[in-house]
Image 1 (tube, rainbow, N blue to C red):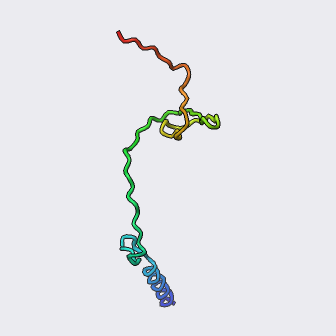
Image 2: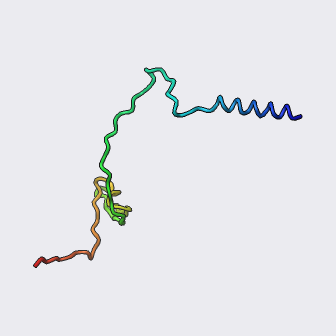
Length: 91
């Protein structure tokens, strides 16, 4: 009874070894099938303060709040909060 179980386990392990694909091995595609990925320009990392920023879409008039000023879509107008105007005088 032990021999069929052992042979079954060896068969399963053997098939599993053939199905395993190592991602570090080079691709087996022909050179004409390999596509080069275009170079991506690296942007400077943007540091953005985490503050809720309301903005208005000038086309629709929609007002929405965004988690940071960097998340405001291009074309939207940030809305300045009321009551935060300061008159600073330098002596």
